[in-house]
Amino acid sequence: AQRVTQPEKLLSVFKGAPVELKCNYSYSGSPELFWYVQYSRQRLQLLLRHISRESIKGFTADLNKGETSFHLKKPFAQEEDSAMYYCALSVSGTASKLTFGTGTRLQVTL
Amino acid sequence: ETGVTQSPTHLIKTRGQQVTLRCSSQSGHNTVSWYQQALGQGPQFIFQYYREEENGRGNFPPRFSGLQFPNYSSELNVNALELDDSALYLCASRRGMGPDSYNEQFFGPGTRLTVL
Figure (tube, rainbow over the protein chains, first blue to last red):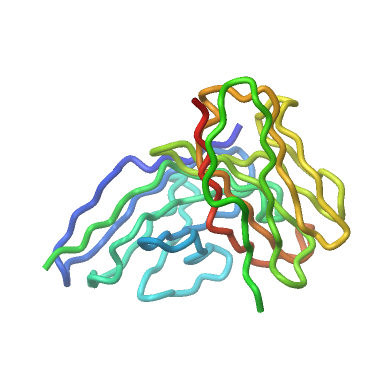
């Protein structure tokens, strides 16, 4: 069975510092990987997915199949980046049946 | 365009009771998925409905069941409630289904269920 691991429950960084939220997965096939974000008092929403290879709100994530990782990065953290971030994996190709990690809370301080 | 809505927002039940949670999918979306999110955990996939039929199920017992209606709204039913069923239940909808029809799924705000 597939599994997603986010080793950090909380990541605290200063404004302007680089951010890296770690995500490792286990799955023998070719997964689709996603990052979802939940801002305070808002619903869960898609941030980015590896297939699109986009940069959203300054965040990027590269799928590393050799290391089975999909870390989320941003060069300069902003206060508005403070939120809960979830890494998720889909093996069905439909992107509806997601396996989520336990999440990392990013706290950006002045 | 109206987003995904869920009702009720909160509810409290006792062990052994039954509960029905409701979800209205976003306009134009025909696929609905349900997730359970326990405190401090990520969402866990329960099942998915496409055009009124269950299409895929996670590791949940049969006392978790669902329905999808012709207007694509959905219900999640849980029988014989247990204390561990206390969680936030999320509904998500998207358009289409299949590996060649990726469309982003949109989550509702969730229903907080407490089982005493």
